[in-house]
Amino acid sequence: MRAYDLLLKIREPWLQSVTLHLSKGEGVRDALLEELNRFYDMLMQSVETGDSGWLKPVLIEWAQARTETELREEEITISPVLKEVVMQTTTVAKEELAPAEAVFLVETLMPIFIYGYEIIAQQESLVRISYVSTELEQVRSELERLDRSKSDFIAVAAHELKTPLTLIEGYSSMLGDMHADEDENSPSALLIKGIGNGTRRLEEIIDDMIDVSMIDNNLLSLNFQPTWLNRLFDVLIVDSENSIKERKQHLEIKEFPGCDEMLFADSERLYQAFRNLLTNAVKYTPDGGTIIIDGRTLAGFVEITISDTGIGIDPEDHSRIFQKFGRLGDASLHSSSKTRFKGGGPGLGLPITKGILEAHGGTIWVESEGYDEEALPGAVFHVLLPLRTEPPDDKLAKLFQPLSDTEQADVSGKK
Image (cartoon, helix red, strand yellow):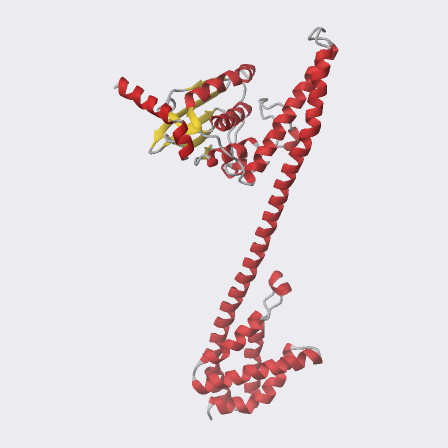
């Protein structure tokens, strides 16, 4: 007897057996019986034509019918169903057919069932991947929304704090004028000085918050003008002299190719970026340590390095430190000092520095073997800036044309 005829013979007992083992309630049983009839029709077509592909549409439909809860809890619902179908097919064939017929039918059906397992495994993987991709997209959208909310909060908070801070500064200045004749070490003078120091520090933090908000919203505008790196470093030495002396550190700024070349950049913003990097080096280098600023020229770029003999940075934190509020260490050990060893802060300096350099068309990265307060592996921050020797737009080009001609004449004269 043909396998097709054998399937016809065991159809009714097969449907009863499989339905009984796969369902518990009457309502579920009726719906399942309809699906099993479809499956059996396709199984018979596969046997008749020798093409296992007849089962594919039914199996795909079953795999795609998995609920979101089942996907979330990673429940596998289709493979056990097919397993039960195979088991009941073998059982029913043994009960309803002669031994030789049962063996023949099971041997005929087994390649078809194996094909079914392959289709189910493939389809369940695709459904799972689609579900995970959707989940990841939702998470990404939520993270973007939270980041926008955080940026909006920073912008609003910074601008709202500006008004009361201006009032405090004004009243502090008036108090200073009222007590101008008193000794600088008098209680009133010391209190007024403390208020002034606190408001200045708060103003710096608010300015940083505003800068971060501008960078996040791509509103940071640059005022390009002729800039010389060595002159920026000269100002940096003067401004950091007290901090370096207080920490008994040694700052060395080397003359390197490109440091005395004119390039078009926003000198004020570049100074802010290098000041942040130097402040960071001072903060995380123990007393008596060394900080070195060096560099070199590359094809179309100048690379500046700020290296220190500090406590270093773990490799997994190399990217984190350039994120907003990505300060390292214990936040509970916060200190209002910007240069005290491991002093705390809002964690905005390096993100601002990164934003400024990227607005110039440059980049920044850090190298460090790791964090160790005893071995002091140190860290090296690399700044890559384009050697922009021409103004970025026509208006600036016309404005600085005489300067460019003078530079070229000086170079020709030196030759």
